Length: 160
Image (tube, rainbow, N blue to C red; front, side):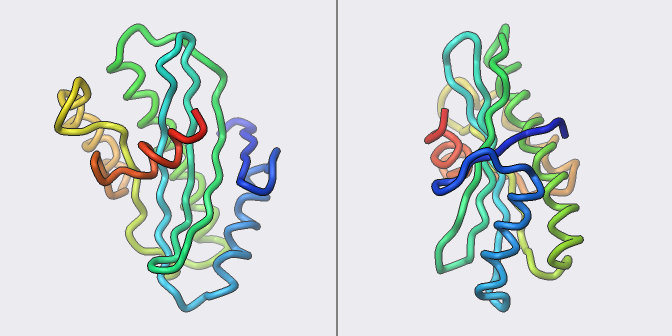
């Protein structure tokens, strides 16, 4: 992953290592709880398009923290290209964070690592569902689509 910098509601210009530190601190407050990692991406409809990737650490039943990063704006010829780019951005971030968080916190702390994809059964993105869900599952993550993909359609969308 190139040198990405993240923001949270309280901090800006966080390196990936700093995000890992923040997540570890959050988990250490209640280490026996269940946590889910949720990665999602969304993009603006402007041209050039900016993709925002977000990571949410959900303490199941009791709050969450999230971080986001923005890519340099790019031109996408089609909606399909944009949806694929969002999905690849999520997979890339999820792979990096999964490995680093497992090293730091252990494999047993997280269940149900999810990638939330900004596609749904209604609207123009429905024709991409099989392809992007297959991409996500191929990397060993659970794929979640609209209306349940809040990591993309709410968290990441908030920062586009």
